[in-house]
Image (cartoon, rainbow, N blue to C red; front, side, top):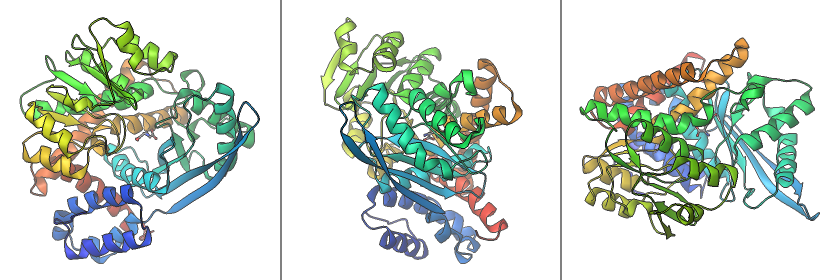
Length: 450
Ligand code: GLU
């Protein structure tokens, strides 16, 4: 990877971290983006480098890896690998999701944990950063298999969790069903109904309104804020959304509610285009109820078409919301989007755009919102869930959505102003990283560099 923007001192930090974590490409990618962005910060405040806080920040506080044995419905024993990387707790208890996906390895969890540290700082909600998961593939598994896997996973992880220690939530492959099984096993092992030790819970048993919708809604609110700075809005615009999980579904819902038209969704097999606008009830039925493939949408919806494999970014539209997974939008896709006149990109997923694609979009004058700012609404609403649990309160939907909207406004303002302050106006990547970095680094310094 090229690091033209890294100063020699930051390059040293990067090189030492790479030497210590060889082969962790996604982690290197996330780290290099942050280090490049903070170059103007350390130039003005050399004390950040002199104190050693940058070097400390790139190393997780604790990394836990464990074996997860589980038995399938035919009685065969399988072994998965579980992870929890507790990255930084300077601003609050470790906080971040769990991902169950066959691609999970230490590099993926470290990159996600690293991103989470800055994202959580940006929310201003007093939460540290962590990420975890397993290389378990939930696809095609029965409810019983999922339950046994979750119970086995929690049987190891529970000792590292707690409402003041580490508070997981969902991510890819971990939704309401899995959170239920995981929380249940924690309760059984500890004999504590400790609501605040998990977020994304069912609303019947301590979950918060709007948590399910929050990541997707938040990415759309962030887009709206970005467009507003240019005197523009979502209303009347067409939008590409990739993915068909929790983030994508609720991004589509909010785009439509704000008068835009979301016309695509995808999964690992291909994508659908529905120029009339995605029928959300049908998409929810297929993805949330039936857990079927996205192709089923085109089979049931007249006028929609299914493109096997292919790139969702080939479809012309004005806005784009990559909401599937890391590195799903590459430099060729960016070229296509630009040629088709895209105005703005808001990342619903974590690091879905490759670094060269980000650079190309920014050079072409496309507004670009990095995930750690644009998708911060999910974890911010998790923090609201923690507050409600601590106070034994339940807020209604509209109160919760108002809070989310206002937090996204704050996140946008922090990133926007930091970008201006550090001489990169309109560059939300620099703004988000610089602002998140300063909050975490200042807290670490104040607490004695631990
Ligand atoms: N996994 C989500 C994220 O990437 C949510 C984490 C949380 O709510 O703790 O931010």
